[in-house]
Length: 195
Image 1 (cartoon, helix red, strand yellow):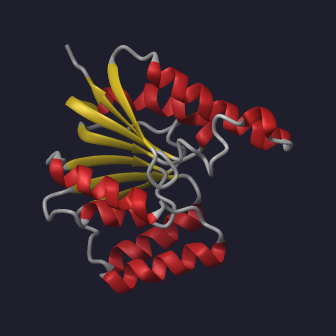
Image 2 (image 1 turned 60 degrees about the vertical axis):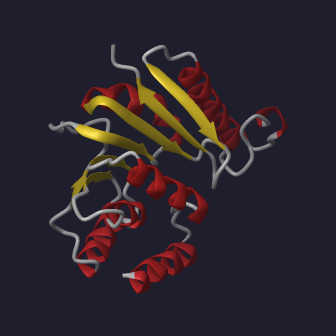
Image 3 (image 1 turned 60 degrees about the horizontal axis):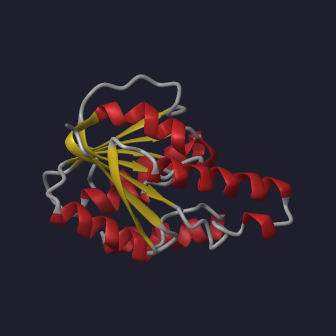
């Protein structure tokens, strides 16, 4: 299993595919274990790296993961088969904003198009079990967040601006209690207060 994970890390680095940083991944897996999370919905599979790591925390964890890029989706299927996790990880090919899912989950993990974070959050919060959690990766976005006025590239500045908007959205969201962690590329953990 470790070999497959190392292979994936190498593949992602060579192909320039964004996967979760190791420290962030470790934090996520410890969080899943400590909070006894059993069902996870992930937005943004890429090559299946985080889905596999999350599923390996415990034998009774199931993951549903959505990916819109067909090549990455196919690569993720291969990696999941290598780890013999096809019974516990379900991949869905499509745009997370356009597909209809059913089911309830203990945790939602958002690691996809940064510009759509608020939309993902708003659409999928209804899929959480009572007391469920939404974890979002790349909250610091390579250290650019909070410094958008110093960025020269217009596209990058706009993207970072959207992440900054998302952070403000989380801070002012009364339904969820959000904590921010400066681990990996920055993580937010939003717990549903659920009156």
